[in-house]
Image 1 (tube, rainbow, N blue to C red):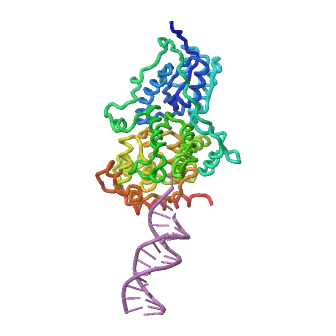
Image 2: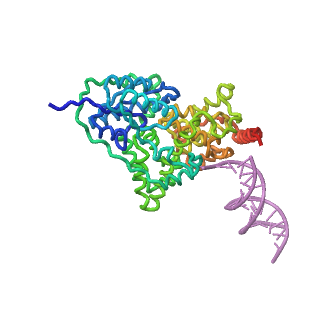
Length: 462
DNA sequence: TGAAATGTTGGGGCG
DNA sequence: ACGCCCCAACATTTC
């Protein structure tokens, strides 16, 4: 008879849906027979519920993870609810010896996990957390003054001078365990997929969530990085980005894996090294956003630069005109072809080219004078790759109220941007072939934006 | 990871 | 030959 082991080790999955380079998973499997749990917690204090596109991604990512873990003999249980309650149930039902997880760095998530540790220790269950998501812990990579970095360039320089630990292997397969006593909710019952209307056709055609597809995409990126990443990653018409952002968001790939692979190009051809460095900067930017969020928990909701509290941004509820502008922006009916193409790409595929994100965001917060949080919430709901740190830090960056933000007066001209970055108009033709009338006069709204900025400055104490 | 206004320079047309 | 103007092509400044 095959030995049937009752798992005594439990590992929690959250934003780290992978089997390779997963410190908590590896440690758990080293410790003994392991069962994995994914807890969908959108109810704990301060947790922001996932957006609709994220729900879509999560559904398929969990199916993929269940498959990958299954091949290692590790069952994956699905539970939904307040983490503390769910873990209390799990502890009662299975009496695990230890529960492990990779750390999260969001403010509310940290509170949940800290509380969890206390709760488990009180129950006599070992609780271990690991560093799996960021290249460095935010409390470890600091300025000379022992504070978090507020400016990207010195952050990046500091990061480059550090050792990043190499990625870890996947655990080896464990002996079969008796799954009959394990209780999992049914993923289908969570209602993560859209029904009426089913808006996810474009997402299905664009993406394959999960670790195997992410690895495959990584291989493609590494093969082509020698050529044109440096020249093409800024070109929405050329599809020159890595498109790995969802894989990083959901942890199908870790930053360590990407960093490690890219480091191999350092001594190769100059072109390859240049491309690898450019992509590394993007990975570093993600870390920077999380560090920023860690050191500034108010990042998602408050202007980092407080003088922007006096900026006269509108909200949709303020006036029918503002509401109308927001609706047109969301629907991709602004009349500016590159913006409308970007917003259409976002809606149809759950993703938008980064250059176009900047242009669409600039139009909303500057030309349309809408608060960045309105745009941030739309991106949160529609992007498959949105995380709280990157999304909010980058919106604040565009809006000018971020720590290391673009100067406010850097206002994109969407028509010029289209000429520069979509010279043949093929990106526009693909996503927004029908032109509509502009919702705003570019020249005038630009002048008004600068006037608002000056007005805000005039309100500051001298 | 701007854009527009303003300043400067230099070539060519022309009287 | 020279001054003058125009203006493109940059460069600098300002927002």
